[in-house]
Every structure is written in C-alpha cells, then in structure tokens.
Length: 127
Image (cartoon, rainbow, N blue to C red; front, side, top):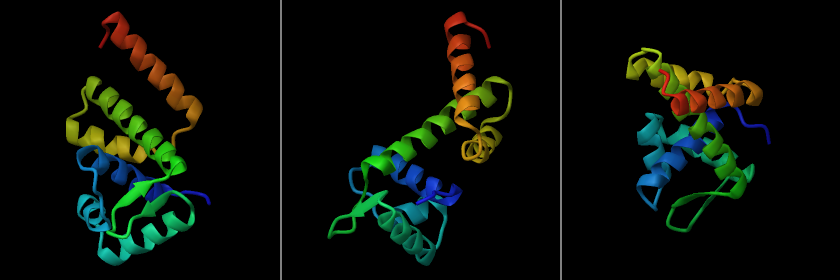
C-alpha cells in the first residue's frame, strides 16, 4: 500500500499521542488533527488494511512495525526541519507549519544531508 501525506499524518499523530498516553483511540486522533469522526474512521480502516495499524477490542490503536517505522521517520523529519527553521529565524508557529508540509515531500537523500548539517552545526556551535 502506498501511503500518501494524509496517511503519514495519521501515523505520526498516533505516534505522538502514544508518547503521551499508552491508550490512543480514533477519537483522540481526530481531536488532535481536527478531523471529523467519519474521516478518521475511513483513514483507520485503510491503515488497518494496509498493515500499518491494529486496534484492540477496546478501540486502542497500535502501530505495527511498518506503521511505527513510517511514523518515526515522519516525526524525526518534522522535529529536525522545524528546529532548523527556527534556528534560521523563522517563528515557531510558521516553522512547525512549514516543516509539516516539507516532511512529506523531501527525498531521503536531501533530508539526510540536512540532518547531517544540523548535527554538525550543533557540534561546532554554529547557529
């Protein structure tokens, strides 16, 4: 199953919410993203059938290994990119919004180069 930006957003949201609470339900994801119950329900069905998410009988959502891999990748991109933009002088709100758009389209190669540059900036005290 190919994941599109919306699927990645859902997986990242489940991941972020699971860092705060061991029990994440569809309603939590909808509130976090500001999406309607029907939209979240359709997305969760697609993510379950794609093998990215499972749900317990009580409705708790869990990322599968492949879902966790995607979620961590997107979350890492988000945090690195938003941090870099803030270091460049972009206000926090805009940095987060822009990072959210960039994280889904940037190539692995370009992100790797940015991440290495950011890590080197931190080590050398630049920025």
